[in-house]
Amino acid sequence: MPPIPEPDTSATGGIYDVNESGIQFRHTPSLPTPANGDEFLKRFKSGFKFNVLERPSKNELVFEIIGVDVSFANALRRIMIAEIPTMALETVYMWNNSGLIHDEVLSHRLGLVPLNVDPRLFDEYGHDVDENGEAACTDRNTIVFKLNVVCGKNEADDERLQKKRNSEFKAEGLVSGYDVEEAQQKKSEKGGNKKSGDDDDEMKEEVEEPSVMNLSIADRAAADAAASNLNKSSTPIDTPHRPFTRHVYTRDLLWCPQGDQLAKFPLHSTGVGSGVGGGIRPLHEDILLAKLRPGQVIELEAHAKKGIGKDHAKWSPVATASYRLMPSIEIVKPIYDELAEELVNWMEPGVFKLEETDDADHRVKAVVVNPYACTMSRNFMRNPSLKESIKMSRIPNHFIFSVESVGMMEPAVIVAEALKVLKNKAINLSGMTHEAEAMNE
Image (cartoon, rainbow, N blue to C red; front, side, top):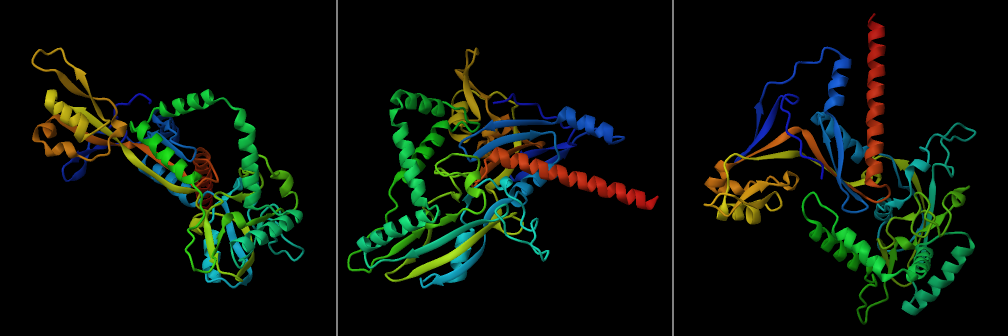
């Protein structure tokens, strides 16, 4: 954890005081307005800090930005949600659908399936044109998937049809989720020679990884629970005396490599932007798309294109991107013994800790150890003694970000791409300003 900086109210013009009813901004003397851009930039550089606080999982990132205005923080948050390009299924050609789910509903479900591919390796649709000057689909801007499933009379008949069709699809060069399962099995067999002691060491390191919120054990327990559920079989419950039901999952989607896509995303590899089994696949192979009864068919072709979350949520690369203001906690009156134990264990766990005191009249006292863990619950204000002993506030120019990626891009990459977009916006605005000034002269 980085050292906790003292709040500099001169750079913000005030601070948010926390009381029982909420928060209230308290104005304080602030720095004079910069005389010019150079002075502003010098002041900004001296106060700006960017620290990564923790990485709870591959798709989660917690970091802090110090010395910026709320407009900067909110712009960064909005860009991460709505302006980072990703790939998603956009156009669906429905050849045959005799299932219960309607064409438009099935198309919508397909569009929301996240694809495990790096969007930076593809162009925007419209860059390539045909001989008539119209936008054309190429291997540089389009990913093609097919879905061709038939429900058999019963489970045995369905398995027979599935094996037959999988062999046909493989012969045509199409890649399904069953090929990914095969690659995973080969990978697990290859890693079977790994010593168990290495696993124990890795697990020990993960458990002992520091957490800003002091929840390392809870985080580990949640991760273990999620992993156990992930490893469970997703076989549907079979009800007697009911017609056989075929569940169509994203593993049934067939990737159709176009142009040199197979060379860029080879099978059974772990290249940039590729799935576990190589190639281009949905991020999760067990997303339920539809259910079929005997004789029902779904046959379609879906094209994935590059887009941004501002146009549709399916292109948003994050599940959540939020920030909160950094808490500032100060003990203005000493808190001893039973009152300190109540504060540490019940009121604000993780924020304070007990320390032995040299005072002969008291055993322990409460001290601030981790303000990052403060959730602003204000529970301690229920006790009049604690209310008078603790001063709580929020720093207006210190933001703690929590970013959770959907999975197609790592959260650190999303933050970096968001900063690039924000930089380009600033450059464009500066250019428009110079043009306006030139026109007025």
